[in-house]
Each structure stands twice: as structure tokens, then as C-alpha cells.
Length: 125
Image 1 (cartoon, helix red, strand yellow):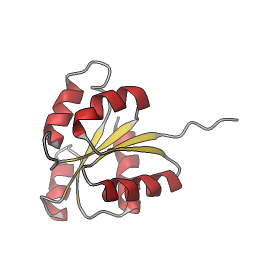
Image 2 (tube, helix red, strand yellow):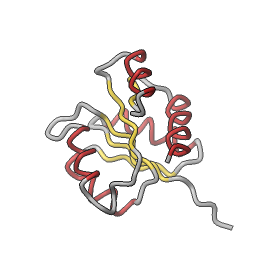
Image 3 (cartoon, one colour):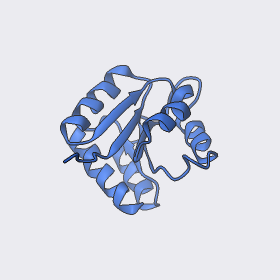
């Protein structure tokens, strides 16, 4: 019997961060894929069909906000929930944003913290 794992797309310009999180998520029972070029996210999302996207905010060329907007503009991708990751705010600031129905997590983050928030975000959708 094949078990359908939840698919998580990690988008971060840092190869090291995305690979650490990808490995941790795969070990936690998810099927994770990393993309380090924000310009490729639409194409990768269409091919991978993620259940959720973890999206870095500060990236060169195309920041997380622009990527989220581009996803939202696509009828076939607009439904995918997003968790934003950023080193630009404190954990306290991120917690306040979470209370305002946005899911923003402050870096650094552990895999356990990310898994907890992924599960919460998937329950909301």
C-alpha cells in the first residue's frame, strides 16, 4: 500500500538552509523538495504539486513577497498555503504576525518547530 506523503516545497536562496530543512522534513515523513532560485518557483510548484510552500522572505532578485504574489496570481497555484521564513524579524514579531492569520517564522528555526507549524498551517487550510 502506497502512503501519500504531504509535499513541502522549500524556497530559500541559501542552499545550506534549504538542504538541512529538506533532510529534516524528509526524515519527519514529508516529501520535501528545495528550490534555491525564486524565479523558478512557479515552474517547480506546477511540477511538484506541493501541499504547502515554505518561503524565505529576503532573497535576491525576487523576494518572498513577490513570489507569493506570483503564486497567488496563478489559478492553479493560488490555493497552496505558504509559511514565510525570515531572519528580518524576531521570534516575538513572528508570533504576533501568526496571531494575525499570517504564518511568519523567524530564523533560525529547528526542524521540529517547522514541522509543528507546517501541521498547524495544513490544518487551517
